[in-house]
Image 1 (spheres, rainbow over the protein chains, first blue to last red):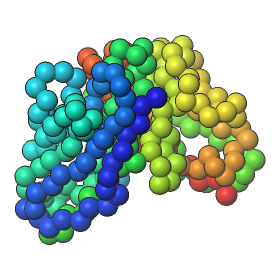
Image 2 (image 1 turned 120 degrees about the vertical axis):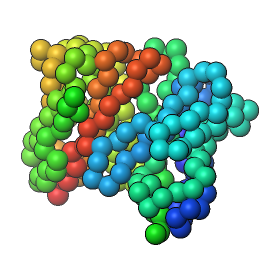
Image 3 (image 1 turned 30 degrees about the horizontal axis):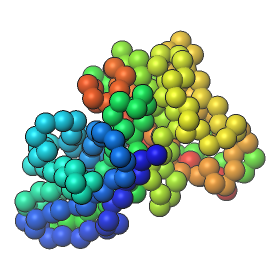
Length: 115
Length: 116
């Protein structure tokens, strides 16, 4: 069974600081990878996803993530955060081709951006 | 397009009582998923419907949980009898096609269940 580890429980940054949220997964096969975000009082929404091809994927709102297969990692980055990025971020993985469509999530990282 | 809607947004019940959560997926989405997040832990998969059929229910914790999707539209998740450890946020998601490689799953806002 796959698992996902997010290294930081809570990250506090000032506006304009750069962001990198760590995500590692454990699964020996091919994976589909996702980052979801939940803004306060809102639903989970997809930031970006990786299925194949270019390991550097770009998502909405200036976010990007890089898949490093050798490190089983899919870290989320943003060069300059804004106060509106305050939210909880979830990394998730799906075992591609395993016949199951369930997502396995990490515990989430809360990001607080100070104006 | 209306999103995934969940009712109620918050429910507080006593241990031993019954609670029914409802999820209305996006119209036309045959696939419906239930997930749960217990406080401080990961969001965990519960089950997956394709129309009215249970495609994968490997995440259902025990037989106190019953999910239905009669007619392949909205779904209900009943917990009977509720226990303290059932407290958490229950998320519903829907997608048009099965799988994740060719479509996105849209999530609802969740139902926060508190069992006291």
